[in-house]
Structures are given as structure tokens and as C-alpha cells.
Length: 306
Image (cartoon, rainbow, N blue to C red):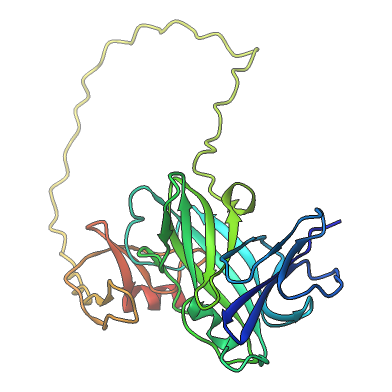
């Protein structure tokens, strides 16, 4: 039987928020809001006035501010938690050293709360991502410095209560991280995703193809035959004809940006384009320059759309 989780937390003296997580296909009888239970065990722990940590699961619906198992003002499901070999959106700069890129795709479902001072639409803004490293340090994971998706709804911005949205968060995760955490600051509730079991690693860079085995019936190498003595051949040269030089059209200026689209303006760049991105993997307009940097240009946008 799949694990069912239900937890409750206190935001203020008069407000009780409950955190719960469940597979979407099963139901669980109502559990008191002040308890945290797991159906696979008999242990019950109170979460009142203490920080509560809930086991996070990819593909499982979690919730908070719950009246019962199925009645929460906030439900969220981490649909994807993937380690990327390279940015699949707008590449801004090289991956920071001693980190790897992780993409989290989260479905957030909200409805009106019965608690006067709780706004469910603020959940993406008050729930912060962080990493737990091997030495026990909790490290904040803000938006990646190397990858940005201009077409996706980023994590960290509030939403309208009553809406359902898909939020995307790119993170530069430390190499020694053991878990990813999502902490709702107003209630101090935390969901912890174990990277050993919840992270989907799609990188194939370490899977280099092995060399083919030698064929048993391979042909025996023959000894080299002595080369025949070279004979001089007189070649009559043709008179050199003048070839008209074609006029090379002037290179169009490179217009675009190299920083985040939200803070940069399109200008003429003093750079030379090496090549444009692959439309099947990169965002339209992704450009790689000869100096090793990348950005977005009108030139590659037109080429990739054409």
C-alpha cells in the first residue's frame, strides 16, 4: 500500500495550517489537524509549535492548510525533478563550478482558505527551495545563474488564489547535496526530497560507447611492397587567368542581449556569432559567440524560426 502523509502546523495563535501528502488515486480517512501520521507505521507525532519536516515525493500530491485529507487550500505536486546535462532553455552563462543543474516542475493548485490571515496564492512566494549538503549546511537555491526559461512561470512569484499553475525552477545544486528542501516560511513547514531516490538523472555524458571487440577472422596484414621508382612527367602549365573577386556582403550587426531578459535590453553587441542553438534543445534565439559566451540575438532568432 502506498504511503499516505498528513501533517498540521500552526501559523498564528488562532490559525492552524495542515501539511499533507498523498498519492492522487487513493483516499485516507480524516486525521486530526494537530497530528502527523504515516499509514505504514504506528507512530504519531504532534506538529504544534514545532518545525515539521515531511518526506517529499515526486509524483505525489502534497498539501497544507487542510481541513481533512482531500480538503486543502494548497495542493502541490513536484511532477519533475531532473538533473540536466545542459540547459534546455535560455543559456545565460557557464554552469557554476562544483554545482550541477536541476530542473523542478511543480503543479500548484489553490482555493480560498477558511483561515483569515492565510493567502494560498502566496505559496510559491513563501515556499523557498534549498539544498542540504553532506556537512549539514542548508544552502538557499535561488534561480539558476546559468539557465532561464522566458516562456515558463518561474518559482517565487505569487499567483491568484483559485488558480492552478505549472511553475518551473532551475537550480544550481551543490555537488555534495544530499537532499532538496521546500520550506514554507509562514508556517515553518518543510518538505524534504532525498536526492538518492527522487532525482532523475538524465545525463549521458559518462556513458561513453565502448570500443568494438576485434573480429576473430580479421585479414592478415600483408607486407608492404616496394614502391616503383618515380618517373618524371613534364606537365605543361596553362597561363594563369585573372579571376574576378566577388564582393562579400557586409556582415549584419549582432543585436541581442547576454544577461537575463528581465533585466537586460536588446542592444548592438560587440561580439561575433559562432553558431546558433539547436531548435530541438535550445530556446529560440540562443546564440553561442566565438569568445565562449552565449546569449540571445535577433540574428539566431530569425534563423531558428526560418
